Image (cartoon, rainbow, N blue to C red; front, side, top):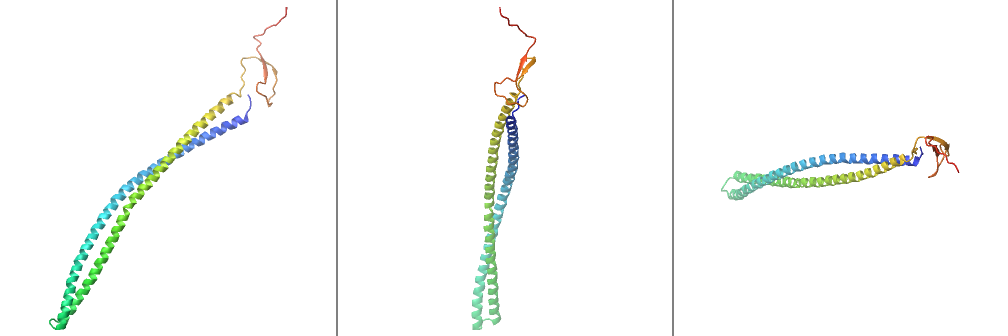
Length: 227
């Protein structure tokens, strides 16, 4: 048996590299499974977010319409109250009606003005809520972008799997080659016989083609003679 530590080192290196490539393949496959779960979860959340956002937009639009309608009614009432205030104030100065009626008309107009101001704030609040609801409609688009990013990550992992599988195949080929070369380190006698000479000692460095031992098959002896 010939000893070649470099060959054994290459064999160990190829074996370790093949195992490492196989581990990378398994890790990438596990990562793909995780990313696919994330992609499905994102798809479900996107669908739900779209439905919820659309519902909130419709609800906010209805609230804006109701608030604007209420504002219009209160403004119409304010116009009447302002007209009554001006009329009763003039009539009170002329003595046609009591001063109390004039003051009451003024107070009613002022109260209606406060109601109109509150109605306007309600309209502004409803419109702000509508803008928020409309802005939330962009969330599904953001989630769609996130889904695209996850798909890109899955594609990258699959590319890494292909590269790792290619590396694993190459390292396995190197391992097979090293194992075959290791078989060449065993020098097997071509027949059973007796060693008559040993030209190499254990631990000695030999060159290719160098005789190690001389083997004799005593069952096939011959005699050479001269006549």
